[in-house]
Image (cartoon, rainbow, N blue to C red; front, side):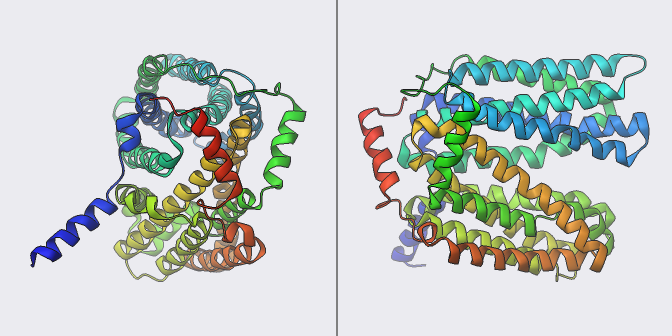
Length: 435
């Protein structure tokens, strides 16, 4: 290999690797990222343990499914309300108090698991409370990240968050599954309680973040103001609608147990669940190139379409490893879409709306997969798991193309010229991000 070619490869590698500048430059981002990673790992232990314990106590698949139903309404209500209070109150305190609430809730699960006769209703109540606290925490936490990281580092910050989140999603359920089977639910809940205590030790070291100027009191009126602001912004609506459409049509995790059987490898079920996370981790590790992209709306559209195409191709593959490969590609595409959506949100939304819009964002990326599982199960009942997976991918591509045609301002969005991005840069230039 020539010296010139060698230099070119090294330059390409530098361009592709994940940008760790936000970690290097922002102490508070390091603390928030570390806290989030520890919290998520512990939460995944509980996420595995709760349905396992419900199954132990009832032996009913319906009872296990109702755990998610118990969490849905608190997630929606508290997500919206959490966004409103994030724009009205001290965001750091909201995150800390929510973390305390999550710790107490898991402590209740631990005590219940240690009783001679654990009560099933406690699992439902605790699940609902946990969903509520987590949804209150999310908007404030993301709004804090917006304040402690520089605007031009937002894409890199989202890549690092995605890397941590998806690595935890791969490792957490696997280790949590082994722990709950070998040691029982109480041990898993104990690990989660310990994780919250460690996370709190990091959160209290984060510097206080000033409240937004002219903050509106949390109310239904302030929530409506946030929704109206989003509706007036076609670029924002594009990020929400494209993601919901992509997930509702092509997210198909409910099919995986049936798909594993169709492939003749029921023992590979965990592999199918892990595929998207593996692809997301790879995309995060090679995300350096995203800093050189400015047409973020088009990047979201292309990534969402690639997600659908990859899911459709996976449905045609003859063995589990090829299915895994294309599901991993789909997960990587979804991760890239998320990076650019997050960049648009954090580079263009004024601080006084950041919490409320973060609540809307939480709902947009939470409801899509739920709708996707309903869609996947319905189509599978008509034509089988492969038909549902493949047709869903094609529907996703069509829906994304329709959104791109219907939202030209989103399609043409350019961070270098967009009025909202320029205004936010000017505001932030007067108040540089904390380090």
